[in-house]
Amino acid sequence: MNRMRWEGKRTTIVVHESTKKLLDELKVHRREPYEEVILRLIEFYKMHSKQ
Image (cartoon, rainbow, N blue to C red; front, side, top):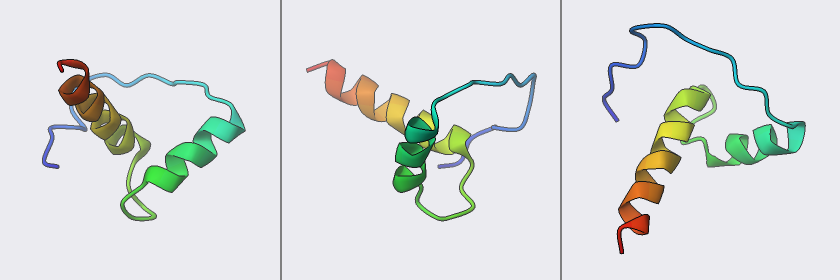
């Protein structure tokens, strides 16, 4: 995924430790930012919710 991910403002999102562990399991590689994981999930949701 090639995104303009580091531009603009940032915010903090608070999640339970169990949610963080689930996000960790979805990482493509160990150092992948959570933002990339979340964006991938959003894209997947959008693709599959249009059906």
